[in-house]
Length: 179
Image 1 (cartoon, rainbow, N blue to C red):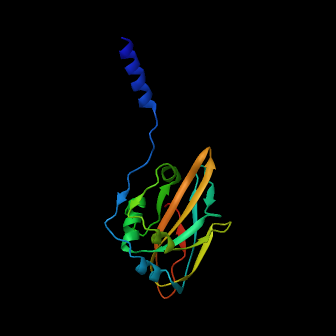
Image 2 (tube, rainbow, N blue to C red; image 1 turned 135 degrees about the horizontal axis):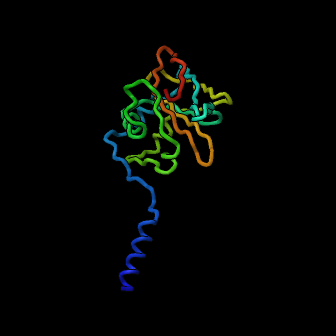
Image 3 (cartoon, rainbow, N blue to C red; image 1 turned 90 degrees about the horizontal axis):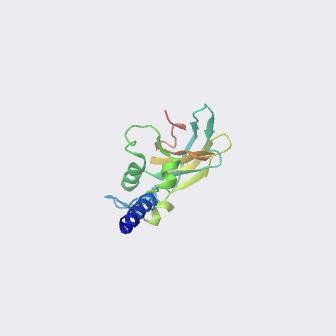
């Protein structure tokens, strides 16, 4: 009887135990071509400008003020990688969103995860109104990614991502939010 009680208590405790919330790495089919990515991110004459914000449940607006905005070439590797994180938003032309809670507690890992992927980017910081300006960008297709978060008992908001095309050194002004 004591053994049965001990086993029941042990099983109950194990059921309550929190295991690490770590997802296995996603194996990407595309290979990262560092030379191609570095060539695409070289200085050009293009400009990408925009604003990023989210609306809170109560109606308040929170911008990306002080957050990093990153632009990276839309290569086959980055397209596959961002599709895993944000879903298949690439063909919709809309901004995609990942909640801060899910990113904080379950960061996605990739295999391969080459260090050159992170180096083949350019970044800036959102101003106090949530505006950003990325300069010296070549013509081509890119992804723009930023965070809009705030804290009310926990981190809320998340990451916004969109695809942009620069043609003749111009791109449309981006409005990154959830429609």
